[in-house]
Length: 289
Length: 305
Image (cartoon, rainbow over all chains, first blue to last red):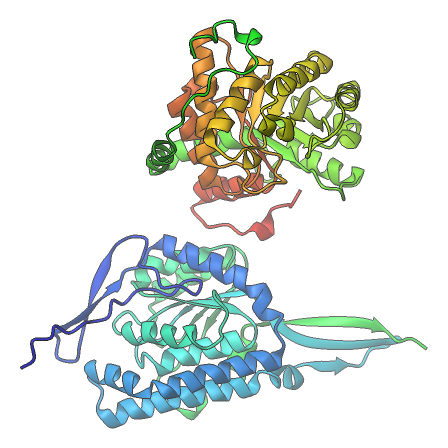
């Protein structure tokens, strides 16, 4: 046996393109597939949510004004970076109990999911926009535009594929987001932040927190500077759904609940995941002669 | 400072040595104070009442100044019980506009004068401008010192100039801007503060906001200590106005702590402490509404001016 002491990674959060620890100084234990302690993850507080929303709001203008083509390029770049780190992610999934073949299949599906949404970047506006017939001499057209800052509860299961499947459609449409990772399996989310960090994604476009849903629900759904909230777990209890709706009503947020059981299903990806976070803007343009 | 008992006779007092490390450490320690709950709300509202709401741009128009005055009178329409700001601070040609818009309120009109922000005009021109600003209805005058003369060591000149403007300003409150960002050292800041106070300043003010760095907390502490030492000798209270770069409610509260710990609660009124700021007002409002509703707010729902 070697004398070397293994250097293990400190899992922090990802806010505004940096990796700070939670401002609260609290941590919670994360376990591997055998029930042994794997690491400590940040137990983020409402102030981390506040900081992350601030970063997301600052990043929104720049990101939404990028060309659709450029956003697609950047999503593609994330996929490239993930591909080069495949082994690391497979290994991470194995530690939480995945069989090697399942881990490989989830990581590969994750990469493909990014490519899928990268492809939609300059197409969804064509598909969902319209030219409308009107009874006056106006050129009238409707286009989807990003809604703003989106807070997301990443799916509890499938910690990599689920995470990417909720982030990609939100950001490809020009939104910025604050994501709370899977409570039980937060580690691959933070490793994915390292991938984002090296993929030309501007700081603040994606912010990733770890911690407890119950504690952060109020702040992620009531914040007046958040425009939409996204959750996909099928088993959100009635009380929490009620809270989401009530908090969301404060500033008329979109509360998007889309129930997905398995992110490898064919139906778990579609352009409608993009349009859920879009507003339709209609323009009347006088027809000139 | 043994010779300073004849306050107004001494244009340039002895150099007061300033321990830069100690100043920075004291500021850092005071900044770690935690102000929460009711105290925080009180501090936020106090800070709001101390703002000199400022617009000093070449592009200012009467319309913009009038809008700013409305903001001064009613910072947030949803909360009519909030205090108004202390004053509106504008360029000389906008003083009459602001005076008209604020007539009948308690809000003061402050005009910058003496060739703000550079201060490079003849003394006659500066006095002329001061008289014009006061004549147009400003009850507060924000003047700049001649930093070039100060740095040359021409302290008599600077002292006399402040005294002359003091006289031209008549009953108006005189705030003397030291432009600390150009004064190089804390010793110079202290010396300029002493000089301005002795020449008759009602307030000393850090910066024009046009030079970086503008107001910083260490510089403010140095100036507050000058005010304190002068008060111990003469019993006269001089006001303080940090200006420029104060945009966040948290910073504002830190300044209030600094004042309270250096000068005491007597200075915690708009008569003796002001913030020169524009965007600070909205951040204070965001935080006040957050404290009252428990919900994080968005600047989207607050008027800009």
